Image (tube, rainbow, N blue to C red):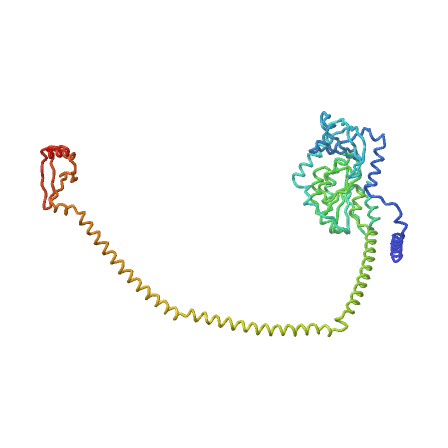
Length: 487
């Protein structure tokens, strides 16, 4: 074990020496963009790749708002993305659908941003309609997705350091051998528990579901211990070979598993419904083992790096502490602490003098304010104000009496004048002087004009001491009376 640690330390030191050497900095270093541009140029200069027919299955066809269509073309082992621009897409009689076998004429190029191989489609020719398997795949996926079996909220994190890994696959397949090999290379202390199952054929779905339920059973936990993570998968094949992992009974068993699950079915381009139901999807069984089993050597290297960093951090912190202690020890407060008090003593004396002066000034100001308030209070004494109000009340009483007498005298004079006017206007006083008042006996209206009378009319003559009832014998107008008097 000591030799092993010595070899690790020696290899790490050699790496450090290489970094410290100046030669390594002279080697050319390229950016990702540089490499991508180089590949783009090489592909674009290849005449063979500028017009080539490629056949495969459409697994995704998406038309953007711009009118351009983006798709994925795949076969049993590989896939390539593609694009068909709006003007070329307009020439299609019918757009391809997912799952259809097609032949695509186009040019191969490398995308500028993603660095992926892409076919720039010129024409697309359909070969067959959507396959039976793809139709079944889509129907089952829609059904289970509607039930929430593929929701991201159901996904769980894989344990970082599993002690025991369960594998559900065929005992004769290459998948279990690859998983065991990777596990032994990465961490020999991890225990692999195989749950044999059929992975192809009519009986495979039921066999896979039973193996998943067995791995989650209390009996297995009691016999071999708790399973920390479960890998479900097999090697590559056609869609018919992988179909067992699309069956509803298997997908439901994966979603129901209490153990975190990793789906590792087929190759990277293959997708099954267990990939959506599992907590994590691995492109291959080998990748699943690399994903689940921690690399012991990597952990040891990381611990060694952490140890080196920790030692360096401690040394740096100690150096900083020593330097800080040295600077602090040279400060005046530690060399001559009493000298620091002289400034404070002078400040205290100055503050004392200022406080004393402020106290005297404040006391004098308070006395002045008190005297001013006393004078104001005496000025506003209720006795003085009461005497003023009594004097003012007497003045108001004399003035009120004078105004009352003056007003009564003036009213008496006005009353006498009105009485004289009323007496002069009294019609009965006129009657005393020999005049008479003639009025209609029925309505009481005073008759003042000859036109008011007619022959034989009854009239009432009011005198000073009574009234007369008369009958009009003749009506003589004013001009006739004046004429008779003149003659």
